[in-house]
Length: 170
Picture 1: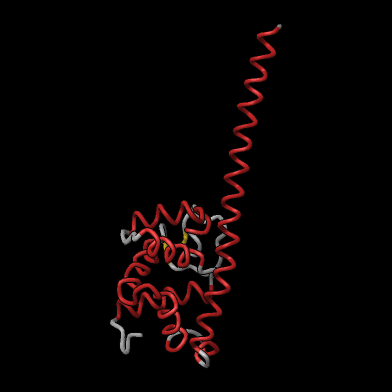
Picture 2: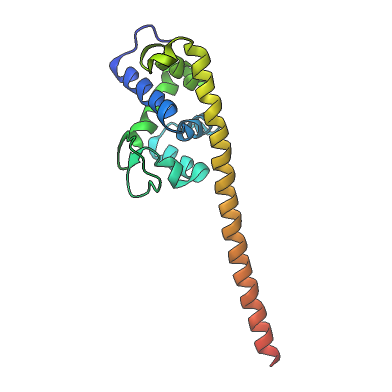
């Protein structure tokens, strides 16, 4: 962990911590997967990859934007979530592969709510574990929605083909 992080890193740590403490943390975990698996470190590419993995609703969570279909009182920023995406990239550069765990431990120990400070490493891991479950649910929901849309399209095409076939025999 960084002994005394710069203000930019500190801001990124606080942003990440707030996402896990007060929101789902899904976007950060998706970004972690993408950064580690695909080596993406460009915010625009990370945006597209996250949207593909978790969908717009989860990508825009905690941002005041029309694409956030589940707004809450907790708002990190306006418009697209590039503030978060840039923070993830910066934290991954500083902390390496274990950036979420290290940055969340730093958050829990120094910047989070008082209840997090007592057992910061354990509380950080609990926040990550809770968010992993939510990420799994979000990915399954997105895949299920895509399968459902695909089946509807296939059904419509099949009905259209059957309609053409029945018209040809008349």
